[in-house]
Amino acid sequence: AESFLCGTFEDLAGLDRDIAESKLMGKAKGLFFKAQEKQDRLLVRLQVTADTPENAEDMADIAQGLLAMVRLGRNQDSGEGLALLAKGAVVRKDGLTVRLEIDMPSSEAAGLLSHGKVIAGFFD
Image (cartoon, rainbow, N blue to C red; front, top):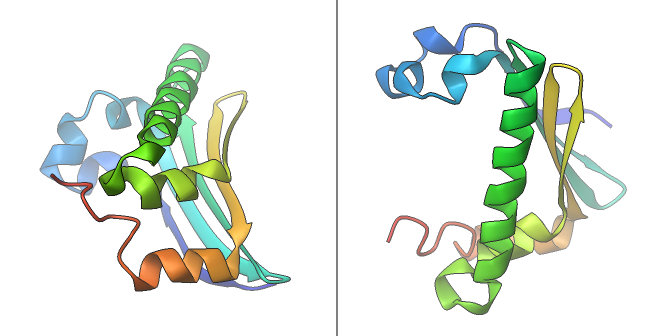
C-alpha cells in the first residue's frame, strides 16, 4: 500500500520557535510521519529519533502518559473523538527510536474526521 501522507524533518530546531523551545522536541534528532490505508484500515506512524537512550525512554514514557490521559477522557463529550483515535494507538521504543502507531478501521477514522470529533473540544 502506498502512503497518502508522508514527511520527514531531520532538523526540528529549524521548524518553528515554539518547537525549538520545546524541552521534548529539543531532545529529538528527527521526526518521520506516515499515513496509509491498507485493506480498509488506516495505519499512521509518527516516529521520533532521540539524541540519547535516556531521552528515548523519557519520550516513550511521555507518549504513553498522554495516551492514557486521552483514553481517560473518553467519557467526556469533548474527549470522545481523541479517545477513539487513541484506542488503536501503541507506543514502541527501539533504541533511540520512539514510534506512535495508530491502526484503526478506515471507516471509523473517516467518521471521526468528517464530523470534527477528533479535535472537538481539544483546545477548550
